[in-house]
Length: 100
Picture 1 (cartoon, rainbow, N blue to C red):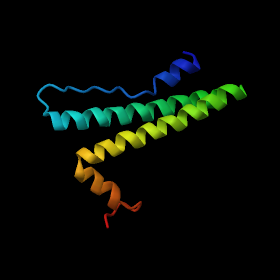
Picture 2 (cartoon, rainbow, N blue to C red):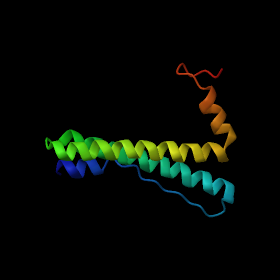
Picture 3 (cartoon, one colour):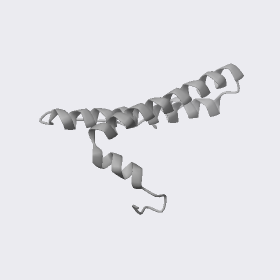
């Protein structure tokens, strides 16, 4: 198995059964899956970045990774608008794992 095949195995396997889910919950599940996909993309591009020595490719990958991080912020913001409990957790969570 080559390096690219091994890297692609790292991607999450997102399986979502949307049948019977309310529209509000469906939207939240869509956003959560989108966030996972963006993190997967960052992981994939980071692996590619570490495997190349071509400066132009590295520059492109760095730019794309930065854009994926913007996408995560957009999806997270949308999720927080739909899920106040999630927003509260993000606002009040400390690194030691305790809420304020």
